[in-house]
Length: 174
Ligand SMILES: [Zn+2]
Image (cartoon, rainbow, N blue to C red; front, side):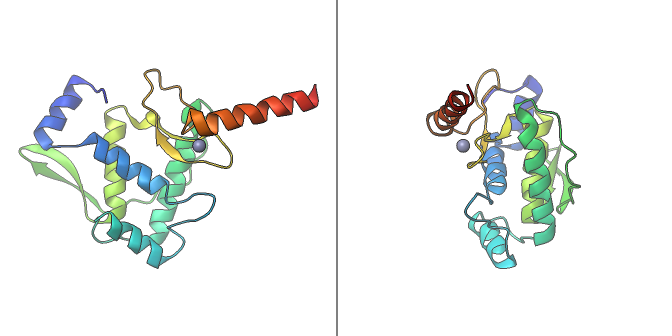
Protein backbone atom coordinates (compact mmCIF):
# COMPACT_ATOMS: atom_id res chain seq x y z
CA UNK A 1 0.00 0.00 0.00
CA UNK A 2 1.38 3.40 -0.92
CA UNK A 3 0.80 6.58 1.02
CA UNK A 4 2.01 10.10 1.55
CA UNK A 5 5.16 10.87 3.53
CA UNK A 6 3.01 12.40 6.25
CA UNK A 7 0.90 9.26 6.21
CA UNK A 8 3.95 7.05 6.59
CA UNK A 9 5.10 9.14 9.55
CA UNK A 10 1.69 8.94 11.19
CA UNK A 11 1.76 5.17 10.73
CA UNK A 12 5.17 4.89 12.40
CA UNK A 13 4.35 7.12 15.32
CA UNK A 14 0.99 5.67 16.24
CA UNK A 15 1.48 2.06 15.18
CA UNK A 16 -1.47 2.51 12.84
CA UNK A 17 -2.07 -0.44 10.54
CA UNK A 18 -3.83 0.53 7.32
CA UNK A 19 -4.28 -3.10 6.29
CA UNK A 20 -6.13 -3.80 9.50
CA UNK A 21 -8.41 -0.81 8.82
CA UNK A 22 -9.07 -2.03 5.29
CA UNK A 23 -9.89 -5.52 6.56
CA UNK A 24 -12.19 -4.25 9.29
CA UNK A 25 -14.04 -1.87 6.99
CA UNK A 26 -14.48 -4.53 4.29
CA UNK A 27 -15.69 -7.05 6.87
CA UNK A 28 -18.30 -4.52 8.04
CA UNK A 29 -19.44 -3.57 4.53
CA UNK A 30 -19.66 -7.28 3.70
CA UNK A 31 -21.92 -8.13 6.64
CA UNK A 32 -24.59 -8.24 3.92
CA UNK A 33 -24.56 -10.37 0.79
CA UNK A 34 -27.33 -11.67 -1.48
CA UNK A 35 -27.87 -14.65 0.85
CA UNK A 36 -27.53 -13.29 4.38
CA UNK A 37 -27.24 -10.24 6.59
CA UNK A 38 -25.27 -10.28 9.83
CA UNK A 39 -27.02 -7.06 10.88
CA UNK A 40 -30.49 -8.59 10.66
CA UNK A 41 -30.76 -9.08 14.42
CA UNK A 42 -29.18 -7.94 17.69
CA UNK A 43 -27.93 -11.47 18.17
CA UNK A 44 -26.05 -11.75 14.88
CA UNK A 45 -24.69 -8.18 15.19
CA UNK A 46 -23.32 -8.97 18.66
CA UNK A 47 -21.84 -12.19 17.32
CA UNK A 48 -20.15 -10.31 14.51
CA UNK A 49 -18.66 -7.70 16.87
CA UNK A 50 -17.47 -10.45 19.22
CA UNK A 51 -15.92 -12.50 16.40
CA UNK A 52 -13.67 -9.52 15.60
CA UNK A 53 -13.01 -8.73 19.24
CA UNK A 54 -14.44 -5.22 18.92
CA UNK A 55 -15.81 -4.89 22.44
CA UNK A 56 -19.24 -3.38 23.12
CA UNK A 57 -21.24 -3.75 19.89
CA UNK A 58 -23.33 -0.55 20.18
CA UNK A 59 -26.69 0.07 18.56
CA UNK A 60 -27.83 -2.28 15.79
CA UNK A 61 -29.96 0.42 14.14
CA UNK A 62 -27.01 2.81 13.96
CA UNK A 63 -24.76 0.06 12.60
CA UNK A 64 -27.27 -0.72 9.85
CA UNK A 65 -27.70 2.94 8.85
CA UNK A 66 -23.94 3.46 8.83
CA UNK A 67 -23.38 0.39 6.69
CA UNK A 68 -26.06 1.46 4.22
CA UNK A 69 -24.61 4.97 3.98
CA UNK A 70 -21.03 3.72 3.49
CA UNK A 71 -22.09 1.12 0.92
CA UNK A 72 -24.10 3.74 -0.97
CA UNK A 73 -21.15 6.09 -1.36
CA UNK A 74 -18.65 3.27 -2.01
CA UNK A 75 -20.90 2.15 -4.88
CA UNK A 76 -20.09 5.45 -6.60
CA UNK A 77 -16.33 4.84 -6.51
CA UNK A 78 -16.42 3.44 -10.05
CA UNK A 79 -16.95 6.98 -11.31
CA UNK A 80 -20.73 7.29 -11.11
CA UNK A 81 -22.20 10.45 -9.56
CA UNK A 82 -22.29 10.45 -5.79
CA UNK A 83 -25.71 9.29 -4.60
CA UNK A 84 -27.55 11.11 -1.85
CA UNK A 85 -26.25 8.89 0.92
CA UNK A 86 -28.53 8.18 3.84
CA UNK A 87 -27.53 10.04 6.99
CA UNK A 88 -24.77 8.29 8.91
CA UNK A 89 -25.16 8.11 12.66
CA UNK A 90 -21.93 8.20 14.60
CA UNK A 91 -20.47 5.39 16.64
CA UNK A 92 -18.74 6.07 19.93
CA UNK A 93 -15.56 7.97 19.00
CA UNK A 94 -13.06 10.22 20.73
CA UNK A 95 -9.63 11.68 20.09
CA UNK A 96 -6.83 10.65 22.44
CA UNK A 97 -3.13 11.36 22.57
CA UNK A 98 -0.97 8.35 21.76
CA UNK A 99 2.79 9.00 22.11
CA UNK A 100 2.01 12.69 21.71
CA UNK A 101 -0.07 12.19 18.55
CA UNK A 102 -3.84 12.80 18.48
CA UNK A 103 -5.50 9.55 17.40
CA UNK A 104 -9.09 8.56 16.82
CA UNK A 105 -10.19 5.85 19.25
CA UNK A 106 -13.46 3.98 19.49
CA UNK A 107 -15.70 3.07 22.39
CA UNK A 108 -17.77 0.45 20.55
CA UNK A 109 -17.72 -1.81 17.51
CA UNK A 110 -19.39 0.67 15.19
CA UNK A 111 -16.96 3.37 16.37
CA UNK A 112 -14.03 1.08 15.48
CA UNK A 113 -15.37 0.63 11.97
CA UNK A 114 -16.04 4.34 11.46
CA UNK A 115 -12.62 5.28 12.85
CA UNK A 116 -11.04 2.89 10.33
CA UNK A 117 -13.06 4.48 7.51
CA UNK A 118 -12.07 8.01 8.61
CA UNK A 119 -8.37 7.11 8.82
CA UNK A 120 -8.45 5.58 5.34
CA UNK A 121 -10.21 8.69 4.00
CA UNK A 122 -7.67 11.07 5.55
CA UNK A 123 -4.80 9.28 3.85
CA UNK A 124 -6.53 9.20 0.48
CA UNK A 125 -7.51 5.52 0.39
CA UNK A 126 -11.26 5.92 0.71
CA UNK A 127 -11.99 5.89 -3.03
CA UNK A 128 -10.25 2.50 -3.25
CA UNK A 129 -13.06 0.99 -1.18
CA UNK A 130 -15.54 -0.19 -3.83
CA UNK A 131 -18.60 -2.33 -4.30
CA UNK A 132 -18.37 -5.01 -7.02
CA UNK A 133 -20.42 -3.95 -10.04
CA UNK A 134 -21.77 -7.46 -10.68
CA UNK A 135 -25.42 -7.30 -9.71
CA UNK A 136 -25.57 -10.67 -8.03
CA UNK A 137 -22.32 -10.06 -6.11
CA UNK A 138 -22.07 -6.52 -4.65
CA UNK A 139 -19.06 -7.51 -2.53
CA UNK A 140 -17.09 -4.64 -1.01
CA UNK A 141 -13.41 -4.84 -1.99
CA UNK A 142 -10.23 -2.79 -1.82
CA UNK A 143 -8.96 -1.70 -5.23
CA UNK A 144 -5.19 -2.23 -5.18
CA UNK A 145 -4.71 -1.41 -8.86
CA UNK A 146 -2.25 1.40 -9.61
CA UNK A 147 -4.83 3.53 -11.44
CA UNK A 148 -7.75 2.66 -9.14
CA UNK A 149 -9.75 1.36 -12.08
CA UNK A 150 -11.11 -1.96 -10.85
CA UNK A 151 -14.85 -2.53 -11.25
CA UNK A 152 -15.24 -6.10 -10.02
CA UNK A 153 -14.12 -7.86 -6.87
CA UNK A 154 -12.50 -10.45 -9.11
CA UNK A 155 -11.85 -10.19 -12.85
CA UNK A 156 -11.66 -13.96 -13.03
CA UNK A 157 -15.09 -14.53 -11.51
CA UNK A 158 -17.36 -11.47 -11.65
CA UNK A 159 -15.52 -9.66 -14.45
CA UNK A 160 -15.70 -12.57 -16.88
CA UNK A 161 -19.28 -13.38 -15.95
CA UNK A 162 -20.44 -9.78 -16.45
CA UNK A 163 -18.56 -9.49 -19.74
CA UNK A 164 -20.19 -12.70 -20.98
CA UNK A 165 -23.59 -11.37 -19.90
CA UNK A 166 -23.03 -8.05 -21.71
CA UNK A 167 -21.94 -9.96 -24.82
CA UNK A 168 -25.09 -12.13 -24.74
CA UNK A 169 -27.23 -9.02 -24.36
CA UNK A 170 -25.57 -7.29 -27.31
CA UNK A 171 -25.92 -10.47 -29.40
CA UNK A 172 -29.64 -10.65 -28.58
CA UNK A 173 -30.44 -7.00 -29.42
CA UNK A 174 -28.39 -6.77 -32.65
ZN1 LIG B 1 -17.96 -9.61 -7.45
